Length: 177
Image 1 (cartoon, rainbow, N blue to C red):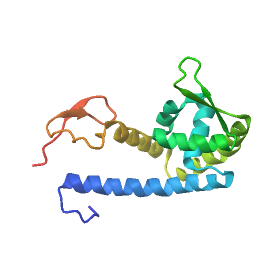
Image 2 (image 1 turned 90 degrees about the vertical axis):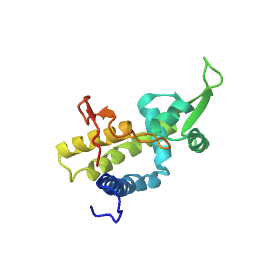
Image 3 (image 1 turned 60 degrees about the horizontal axis):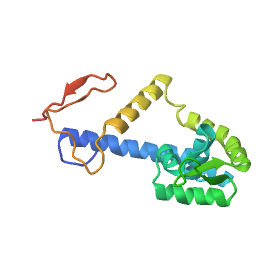
């Protein structure tokens, strides 16, 4: 393995994959999100506008879940979008504790103008991979994101059964000893 960690093969493989994944994400993210600044958007602001455009009005909690941001971050982002006239907040008719966020006409125009170039940048970022590699990468990313233990919890003990990648079947983990 190309890293300098002196642990087990499992540790070295995981660290190597993590570093490569992190570097690739940072590179692709920069290429995709940096140009949003020309439209006065950040990745979070774009994410809110895109979610509202595709899904319609959402309460702030659901919006945070959709764009993978904390409630505090969503509040700040929505504050700025509202200040700029791109979204509007209204109280939920059924539950006054909930605030519903929706696009304004200006917000709809903004996302409709920015979205095609955003998609083109994503396509360009993956253009050097074959279609099969893109599909496989998506499957691996989903498996990692849905099966990895939550931070702050322990990994499954060796010998426990975990889902096999992409099969739905269960296979026992092997003891490295």
